[in-house]
Image (cartoon, rainbow, N blue to C red):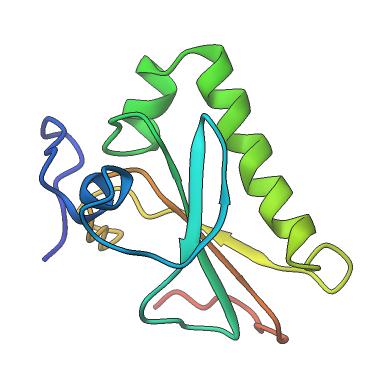
Length: 125
């Protein structure tokens, strides 16, 4: 069910549980600011989720409340994962859903990193 990104952070969401080690994941990168892991329902040959370690519901929440260090660390983590996965030269797509109309499903900010094939144009209907 889509998430209302204006609601307070829910610390029982699946990504909060992953961060606490309550749910296993296939980690590809972790530092003090972010965790990156394979999506359990991949939509491309490479489909990795990158999440900040702080409790943020959406980009709006993150950009309004995160420290400069958290923002820089998260953005650098996304770039690091793309480079580490060999996606820079062939190209990749980043997607961050925010709120009901975007069909955000987890109330924790996350970026989908897609790659590993030609993804084609993004079509909105």
